[in-house]
Image (cartoon, rainbow, N blue to C red):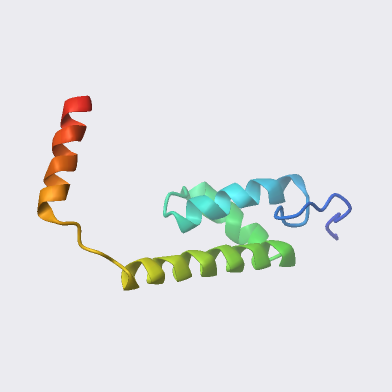
Length: 93
């Protein structure tokens, strides 16, 4: 059985109901928050939809790139500033 690509929309995989859901599942997986059901659904569908594979690969690569850039440019916050922020947050909480 083939997939119906007639409702394809940018950033939403092949356009089927699941592909729209897939975008949300990808985010849960990449954030490490996916349930077993999400992961099972992801791997079941991921293997059958080239658009979804491409979307996942782009998202995953983007996240990895951003993590590396953040680590490369990591700046240590001065202790006095960190303490001042904590104090102010404590007063507003």
